[in-house]
Length: 528
Ligand SMILES: Cc1cc2nc3c(=O)[nH]c(=O)nc-3n(C[C@H](O)[C@H](O)[C@H](O)COP(=O)(O)OP(=O)(O)OC[C@H]3O[C@@H](n4cnc5c(N)ncnc54)[C@H](O)[C@@H]3O)c2cc1C
Ligand SMILES: O=C1O[C@H](CO)C(O)=C1O
Image 1 (spheres, rainbow, N blue to C red):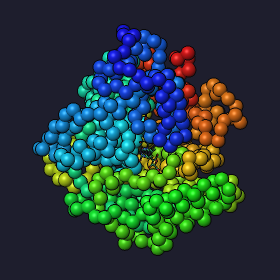
Image 2: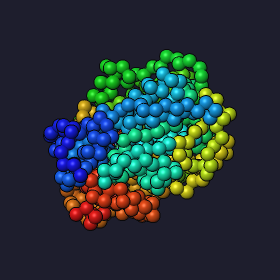
Image 3: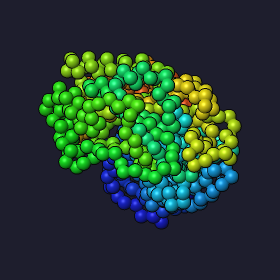
Image 4: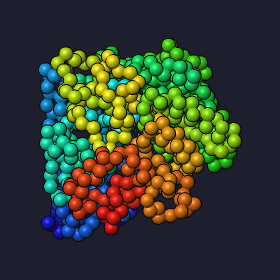
């Protein structure tokens, strides 16, 4: 085991996450340029009894990447290594260093006529980070982004380079596909990609009640679909997209996309947060009308054609807290009615106000038993070409949904995601505790679980040994959900922990221990 290093780390580097909520000064900050350097750093950490957090693009909203010990980032391990086309099968596999960002891979693939199959709202993430917390987009056909990954190479806590796929170490592959950085450092990935496609989307303004009335059919009406809910306006924006080979059209006009109006919106949010919270519903209605107009447009929404990345990504506006949960889509009407009622009541009682949009999305994380036939696919064929058909142990979506072929998909196959966003105008905090607690209780009662990356709060009653009283926590401070997480994930969590202990017996990756213990991923006794 080596104690000296060829790579020179930076000292006292301060990491701040994208939202700017959390920051920490690490003792040493490494940006390795090769897998060999990653191995050397892990071995040096073992020799010096240090822990390592690997951070991707730092887009996780929570404090999960916060550490005062060693911090690693793979922005300099970012080359495409191999690109293999399978023309008979109508897909290609691309192997790249895990520090490459999603948008960088997108650019590489566009030049070769290929595209990533499905994405979330942004493309800033690293290829390792995007799978490590269970990132998803919104589609009745596609699941977690990790379902597009064919294999991973990790450097584990013993300094070993381990190749993982469905045949080699499938159980470790399941753990590493959603690992929260706790199984090993992902250094290389292979992703299955499809011929490039554009997306023809329609954007309709609909009444909230229309969404609920159409619940049974709307989610399966398009390959890509998402809803932005504006509770005080009682309106939703229904965005639906299909693959097309048609050329890109000019982008939709965006009121808040223009700098003076964007600033005005943020300023109004600041006033409502700091001076007069009861203005929040008025501001929501004002900006909704500016951005989307006053007229309902069901069936006559405005159309646009964009590249796949532009179509799937969105303008996420300002620094924000986000609390996102999944639950069975079948429970959606009940959930939305309950949230709608609570938001209205809270506003009337001046208890709390919410920011918008509340994002309502779906995914299909069911998996077929056999590889799908792909030889007859065209550039615009809907649905996934799976990279693997294994469910990550820590997949937070309902495990009871069963696979059905595309033509037979109904709401029962689908996961509902609801994302509660609270902006931080000009980087200042908004109160979130009352809203997020109500949101979490509602989603929990609907059979939900939190997205691992986000600012879920939990409660001291859910943490075995809370270090503070409830009253000592800050408004937005995560209390943790260990007891719930243990109950929800059961044997899957036990398997994850067993594999974690095998891959990282010296606890090199138990750096942000507080986050992991308060959420039941690590047992306190194992790391003391
Ligand atoms: C504006 C915005 C929009 C978003 N939109 C969506 C969305 O639409 N859908 C969705 O599901 N999520 C969304 N997210 C969440 C985001 O996709 C996840 O937080 C994702 O994990 C971030 O990737 P990253 O590269 O920034 O990873 P980081 O946030 O840096 O790290 C996340 C986790 O991955 C681990 N990790 C990073 N690199 C490695 C590595 N090489 N090896 C092992 N572990 C590693 C870290 O240790 C950490 O546990 C959004 C976030 C923001 C801020
Ligand atoms: O975490 C997320 O942020 C955006 C919303 O602004 C999004 O879609 C997430 O998911």
